[in-house]
Structure formats: structure tokens, C-alpha cells
Length: 521
Image 1 (cartoon, rainbow, N blue to C red):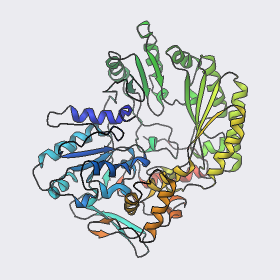
Image 2 (image 1 turned 90 degrees about the vertical axis):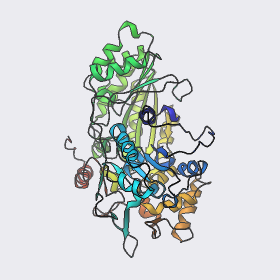
Image 3 (image 1 turned 180 degrees about the vertical axis):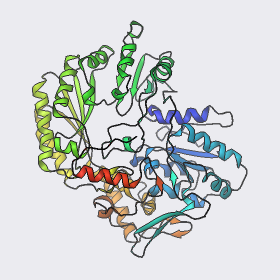
Image 4 (image 1 turned 30 degrees about the vertical axis):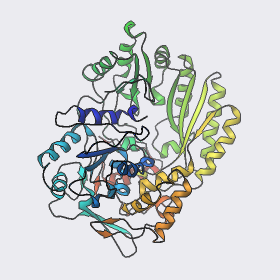
């Protein structure tokens, strides 16, 4: 599973290609023996619920779990990936360094800066790194709380440090592609090529769009074709990846090129595509290259809810995508949706069930799968102020009652684990003591809630910042379920994403009025 992550592969290849580094890969399920002493220990996080595994990895490597307890003899512990770029604060006390944003330029800059002070004391190295754009050193930034335990600000502890740390964005002509192809991966023997990065649709909840702006597309001749050619020397299985691959301006040209006789034995699969771009020709092209299904995100069967989340997609376009998939020779259509979105009503959920049933009736013989999740607020998106809605649990079950008896494969994500995901995505550094306490029971929802109750009751050792103990964490309801006021100081406010807070707030206001989004460059 780990080596299937294209982001992980790029990080590893970037480091391994340097002559001044010796790099070893480490996976949580492989039982690797502890490595010899290292100078750097890094972790990439793509999913909030993976965060607590960091502590086990650190202990396995005999590294103190709290950054403030490490000495000059210990490695620099660094991390990156979308989870840490969005909101690193719950895990901040465990990291020495966090890299915010795309790694293509940032990772080499990090290593170069560290090599320049390699033999200096630990504190000197960290201060030097903190002045590199995109590098966040949590120990040098202190959260300030009022008497009631409300966050007031997070500021640097020294005057010559930047007040905000800005996410770094790769703007080169090429994107990423596989550097490791193996039969032992979750997707065996596949060469993955990143066709687009980010997404121009700007769905209000979507971290993959908002956090990774702007939308970027490599050129066909200089970027995509050379990347595909390189991988097809090693395998005949190709994966085209991106949040909305068919929105590459030359995607049709790419498929035409792949349609030549010399690629007859190549199996091609694509990640999620925009429903409005599905044509019989696209479906036929993919079917001829071994694909059996397409995946589209509809978010909701309700036209009103799609306007709320800025999903520029009509019911007719969804129906057309199903028809075209069948006409092109595909046998299945996978759809993704959500429940519990801001302003959602019962009738909106019923509209989702109605749409799926109508699709099944209109396109007999096409298998339908609906993957449905509970809305979870994400940092740096317009819905970051919104909370998880408790009624989402019943709405997931309602969809199951209506769809499963009709032969539609419903794959709901756990409401309970969505709540824990929200806890990790919205919290500040006070959650660190809970993450330590939940170890051993982190696979249990009850374990998380028990640890949080203990923290609230003052029964756990408090996390600290700059040697000062942090106050008790806020009420569970406040972190997970409440909609925060517009003027709330957010835990990640000192970390600048692609869009400023006032723009995100404007987008939220437009969403709740079901107005279309304004274009973003």
C-alpha cells in the first residue's frame, strides 16, 4: 500500500538520487529491524488517522517521541504530505520540522539548508531551517490561550522568524510519475503518471482542490508522453492519476496517442473523472485498454446541494455519463457522494437515492457502486468553519435501506471514524496528549473518546510548548460538531495556504447562498 503512493515514491526518489544521502524505506507493516543511527527520520502523512502511528515508529527507532526531549544525538524528525500541510498542530509536538507543500523544490532546499549547518548544535540547525520558505519548526512558534482556554494566536518566539509560514507550490512543466514498479504493490506492476495537479472545480469541502491550487497541467509532448514512454519500458500497465484527469486540455490527444497499435497490449486505467467529460469515445477507448469501470464524484443527488458545494454538474450530465459508459463498453460506474454537508436536508439525501435508482433503471446491465462518506471539515477550505453533523449517521443508514435491496452496491465510510478524522483535522497542539494516551487502543472509537475524556478531566500529562504546559483541550462538541464563528482564530492560521482566509470565508458565504464560485487563478 505504501509504495503505491505516488507522492511517497517521489519523496524517496528525490532523496535517493542525491549523492550526499543514504536513504532507507520503512513501512509500518513490514517488521523492518531498527536501522543503524540516522541523522534524519521522515514521515509522509496522507490520512489523518495515520498520524498516531508516528509514535510507534519513533519508539521502534529508539527516538524520543516528544521533540523537546531530543538531544544533539537524536535525528531530526521531519514530515510532510497533505495532512501536515493542512493542519500539523495536533502532531506538532512530535515533529522537529514540517515541510509545507509540494516537495519538488522544498525537499532539496531542506536538505541543502541542513547540510550547511550539519555539525551545529540542534537548536542552531532548527533556527536555520525555520528561515527557509515552506519549512515550519513548531518548537519556534508558541500558541497563546486566554484564561478560558481559547486560542488567541500562534506566533514565532523570536523576532527574526517569519510570522507566517507559506505552503510551497511546484510550478514546473512536469509532474510526477512512478519511480518504483513492483508486483508486490497494492496496484501491481503499474506505472502511474500524474496528469493534473489540483482541480479547477473548487468544491467547497475539497482539500485536494483548495490546498493544492493552482490547477496545473504538464504539456503533452514535453511532460506526459515522455513520462508514459519511460514507464512502458518496464510494464504494460498504465495508471493516469489526478483529481480530474479528463480536464487536462490535451487529454483527448493523449488517448488518441495511446490508441495506436503499439499500445494494443497496454492496460490503461484512470482515477476519478468529471462526469460532464464522459463520452462514448472516452469509455470505448478505456474499455479497449482493459478498463471495466469509470469513477465520477457527484457529491449529492440534489441539484441544490451540488450548487452549495459548487459541483458544477447537472442531473442530465450524470445520466449522460452512465449512458455513455455503457455505450462505450464499460460494465460498471462508481459514484462518490457525501452526507452531512452544510445546509443539507432529509430531502437532499432522498434525492441521492432517487438518482441512483433512476440511473439503474435507465441503464440496465450497468453495475452501480455508490461510495458515500460523512462530510469532514478540512483546513484551508471554505467549509473549515463547519462541523460534523450528527444526523449524518442516520442518513448513511437511510441510503443503505433504499439502495441495497435494489441491487446497488453501497459502500459507506464509518460515521464514527469520520468523527475521529474531524477531531484530528480541527484540533490544536492540545490533542497531542490524547494521541499519546490512545496508543494501544487507537483502533477503537471508544479508546479515542476515553483518552479525550481523560485529557479534559486533567488526568493526562499536558502537552507543552516552549516548556510551558498547554491548557486542557476544549469540549469534544466544540472541536468536532460546532460551526465556528467567522472570527475564530484557527489552529492553522499562522500557516498560509494558497488562498487567504477572507477569500475562503467569501466562498463559504457564497456556498450557503447556493451561489456559483468566482474563478481563482
